[in-house]
Amino acid sequence: MNITGLALSLIAGTLLVSGAAWSSGTETLKAADDALLEAINRHDVEGIVGRFHKDFVYLSVDAEAPADWASRSHEQRREFVRASFAPFKSWGVKPEEGTLYRVIGDTGIVSGVERVERQRENRAPEMVRQRFMRTWQRADGRWLLIAAHRSDFAGEALARLPLPESEAERKIMEVAEAAPRYANVTLSDARVLRMLAEFSGAKTVLEFGTSTGYSGLWFANGLRKTGGRLMTFELDAERAAIARENFKKAGVETVVTLIEGDAHKELAKVKGPVDLVFIDAEKEGYRQYLEQVLPLVRPGGMIVAHNMRYPTARPEFVEAVTTNPALDTVFIHMHDRGMSLSLKKR
Image (tube, rainbow, N blue to C red; front, top):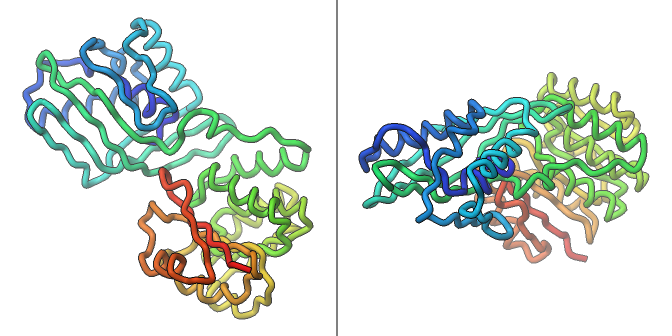
């Protein structure tokens, strides 16, 4: 449930959904779960906090340590919930098709994928999908939520923008966060890309899948320090136009070359060496991108691929990057959409 702080500590805490007594069947479990989501979407703090049941202890798989929800007063729990909602202007949580409800004795399990829509101040609206599981316990004729996980953020700090060290960086970050999103990377993924470019001293970066330019802006943020350039490919003309405008607004148009068209064909015109590659285009094309670009990547260079967990990674690509003796591959951010980092050995 991509709800900062809430899924980790609020919903994952010991909460009671108020209402009529429930039977232990799947339909009444679904009704309890629906009531919880409705309360979240209404920002109904009282409805979420509900009554606390002292016999249940909150166990979190996401936090550094379990929050001591049991020791908090009703008012403290209410303030905690209110603070969790505070950063967001809008909040919509909706389960996708395929949500599974199971009742085993007095325990209910709800699992599946949810779509979360939210908007933080001065940033474009975000829409993400997140796998989740909620465990309910039947108590006093009602369903008590005793555990829930997981969120794509482990806390507010992970969603916080870095402090800009210059006016140029501030401008890039402002344009990036205000830009419309379409299948873009998350903030945490984008920051990794910037770090890789700047840390490696990259001079040439290739990106497959510009979209509206969000990841490209973060690449440019690092490349302006290395004196490098980004060559990014986008098939969709509308998204390419938005990206060009964003690059111009951010003042990085001299750092970025946007090539509109089929990247598989356009790549034939590119010459190496390439320091860093980012693959985030059509998933069925990942293996071909890898095969095309690998000869261009310098020894010690890196190939990064997005969506290794969600949407599900193509098995032929995963096989290719994990069985090639010339590559050393690790996977990061697998709690979220996931990325693979493949080093081309020297």
